[in-house]
Amino acid sequence: MTIEQVAFVQGATSLAQMPDEPIPEFAFVGRSNVGKSSLINRLFERRNLARTSSTPGKTQEINFFRVNDAFHVVDLPGFGYAKVSKKQRAAWQKLIGHYLMERRQLRAVFQLVDARHEPTALDKELMILMRESPAEHVVLLTKGDKLSGNQRQKAVSRVRKTLASLGQEKPVILTSAHDGRGRDEMLNWMQTLLLAA
Image (cartoon, rainbow, N blue to C red; front, side):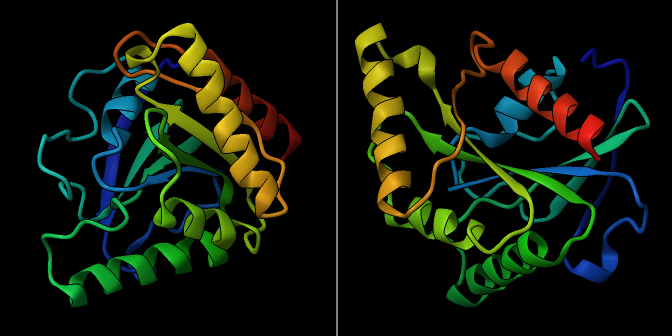
């Protein structure tokens, strides 16, 4: 798939505010500071499309981007950011959960997990939640450029074992916003699911 056109559509803080269009959606979700916005920018080869920050919790809305006038890519708020109120954090997680379970346009959820570490309790929580979602579920290991070849294989194996322990077998793609690894695989998944729709 070639990205010819991409534009920010809107941010939403409730299901009611989301675009009411029948075009497919691909959502990116993960813990705060896992590198989600950077990876979305790399996917589109645009430097500042999704707002990035060294401060966790920068994305505070569900942000919609229209791609090739054919589908939306959706940047979800980071899970588990500690420096906001418990009430705010609970509201984000409730909104994300409703979106993942109820959004009829949702075709696939790309869950980002830091390749350098064991999946956290929050990562596993999201994996469990995705068992109930009708959307496809693909796990993206971020920051793959920071690992050696042997460490990369171990990281992929570690996540596959975690998924298996939860009764799941999902695609796992090693990615890097720095060097672009995994970009073609992500685009191929989107293309496949668009053709299957």
